[in-house]
Amino acid sequence: GAVVSQHPSRVICKSGTSVKIECRSLDFQATTMFWYRQFPKQSLMLMATSNEGSKATYEQGVEKDKFLINHASLTLSTLTVTSAHPEDSSFYICSANKFRDGPYEQYFGPGTRLTVT
Amino acid sequence: DAKTTQPTSMDCAEGRAANLPCNHSTISGNEYVYWYRQIHSQGPQYIIHGLKNNETNEMASLIITEDRKSSTLILPHATLRDTAVYYCIVRDLSTDSWGKLQFGAGTQVVVTP
Image 1: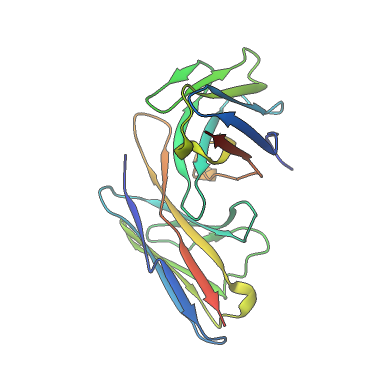
Image 2 (image 1 turned 135 degrees about the vertical axis):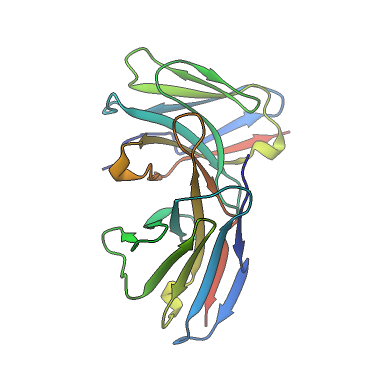
């Protein structure tokens, strides 16, 4: 398989501050990465699609000015939650496409637990 | 609108086969069936995928009906570590979708001793 890492694994921040989460593909290049959010006892919700070198595409209802996504290289995408509030507390998960003999495989990171106090 | 329908939960005895059904009656010809699972507080893990033929790998088997309107994921010998939420996802791999995955509610599988 392929390895996707996230950093940090958990973070606690105060309301009004910004938090950056990194997503890295460790052993493959990923032209496309995705960001998901998951609230307790709910399924994953796709937030945005990130393509290397271009602007991210956000799903309907996701505020692009609040959730800043940068995909500066083929192995790194970052999600910055700006002016975080308690309702932004969630489990944030990234994934990356890896092309392999046809249909893209998509590999997920371990997730980042964000708690806003 | 959800593209797949799965039972909310299933129990399975350790050592037995677990058969997880999924309905995807509106699947189109170029959409694949993917299965992922998520163990509590972890990122999802890829299990298997298929288009129209049955598939098998070291983790599971995927049986797709001939009309492709439903499929079954088979875990041949369930272990306690297979306790997880299992997601059946219909995936469009056309260029403009980038192969993004839309997760439904999934099936909570509990394997008991």
